[in-house]
Structure formats: structure tokens, C-alpha cells
Image (cartoon, rainbow, N blue to C red):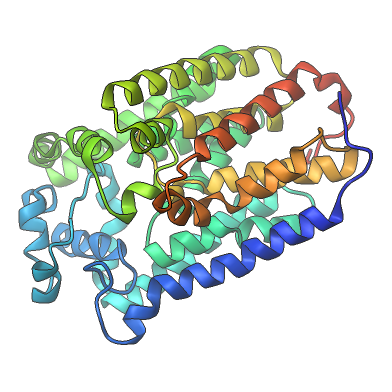
Length: 398
């Protein structure tokens, strides 16, 4: 393996420092209008969390059709929100309503605080369990993606924890792993590669329990909410919403998409070309995951491949979904400090570390090139798998 002569503390310290300072600056810039008592991009403090809180109250009142009808959903917000024209859409499948409905017991601000604290706590679990160094665990917990989720009121901390824990428990606790994958179906596009990985790696028990968990959640949701809620969800066609968004979406939100499709569309303004490159990316990443789970004996390394590949296989994914991606960066950083980095890897990891908070301003300036960073990191990981014998005595965790 081609390694650098020594670790560059300067690159690592500067990268981490820029990450923290950039995160604080991003949070301040994103919330400064709220400090003045104004709406920002038609939204209130917590941004997307207003969606979740509104849905929670509608679920508590059994108004499921209103949840999955964007026009009816926004009608339950304040007049200022309605007048702003901000897009309201809840695309998550009905099993999501179970945990969300609890939020209806709290006022908006109390619910937002609770959501934020629980999110950080849940994400801290894999950060501390699957990373031996407490310092690196803290870096994961307070990564730029954490701040991004806190300021946008999104669920990336929860889904990231499900993805990481499900994958890392494949060998030690396959039943629990499968159950967690079932819970991850609240955000299906994050799990596109999981069935492929489980089949390729021969994780039969985890696969079976993932199916059982998923089917059970669907059945229970029908029992509690009725078949009508699923009809409402299908009629809302979340896949159509996603397709329309990536093909014709404008504004700052489109710059939060790190997918190959969106980058090609923004660079060349050609939908067909964007779909072509997305197809190539998806085929390549599927091949990488199959190879990794068939050949690699190191769980952390093949899990890293799957996580990174997740952000290249789907055309629709947001920067706040990259919490698990941050875990991969810290894993590779920890390993590199112990055993040496591939030439250029330190710089790559620091650029990737800053991606969640930098892709929006750089995309706005005409540089939506972050899929190249993700692709390069995936290639580095595949190279490590080819040379995995070097790492056999260097597991980051047992």
C-alpha cells in the first residue's frame, strides 16, 4: 500500500477546526432571521421539524388523509407559514407515525428541544460503542452533520444510528441487526443496498429478521391506523415528489443533494445525462458492495463501503442524511493515525468531513462536485479491501 511518510497534524487540526467553526457559522447564519422574529425561507425555528410536529398532532387526531395531502397538511399551520408558500410534504411511510405521534403531547418549542436532545443521545450510542477512542467518539457526535440536523430539525441522527448499529451488529447480534433494518424502512432509500449486502455476505438470519421486522411494522400500522393511511401514502406518491424535486427543484434545498444525478443536472442542465450518470454510479456502487461483502473479512471496512456507497446509489438524498458518512470518516481517520494513510487520504477525509455544511454554498456558486469526493473515498476503501491483510491485526474495535 502506498502510504504517506507521516501523519500531517496540520491538515487534521485545520480540517477539524474549520469543521467546528464552519458548523457554528452555518447554524448562526441559518437561524439569524429567527432571532429578529422573522420567517426564514418561509420557515420557523427548527425548519423541517414543523412538518414533524404538525404530523404528530394530526396523527393524534387520526387525520391521516391530511398528513399525506400537502395542501391539507399546510392548512394546519399558521397564516404566516401559509402565506410564505413554503413547501409542505410528508413522504414517510405510515410506520413512521408510531414514534412521531408522541410529539403531540408537547408544545412546538418543547417538542423541538426534546427531538434535538434525543437525536443527539441516540446518535451517541453507536459513536461510543463502535469507536474505542472517546475523543474520536466525541468528534462523531459533534460532526458538521449533527449541527446540520439540529438546525434543520431533521431526522438524520436517528436514521444514521439505525444504519450504523444495524450494520455493525450483523455478526454479533444478527437478530437485533435485522430488527433495526426494519425500523430503517421509515427512510427506505437509505437501505437500498442493505438487502444486496446481506445476500452477498451470507447474513441470512439478519435478512430474515429484517423482513419479519418490516412486515410486522406494516401489519401493526394497518391495525392501529387502518388500511386507509396506506392508501393515502400511495396516493401522495412520494416517489413522484422526489423525482419532480431532483429533476426540476430550485432554491437552496437542491444544493443539499449530494447525489450524482443532481450534480450532473446542475452542471449540464440535462436530465437524460443526469439519469445516465446516476445509473452508472448505481451499478458501480452495487458492484462495490457485492465485492466488499463477499471478499472482505473486516466488518468495519465493508460496512464503510456500504455506507459511502449509499450516497452514490440513490438520486435523492440530503446532506443531513450523512451522519453515518461522518462515522466512516472518523473510522478511517483513527485507522490512518494508527497505521498510516494512503497518499492524499488525509486531505480527502477533511474535505469529506466538511461536505455537509459546504455543499450548499459551493453548489450555489456553481460547484456541485461533491459526488466526486464520495466516489474517491469509495475507491480508497475498495483499495484497502484489496490490501486488507495489512489491517488484520488492527481492528479499531473488537
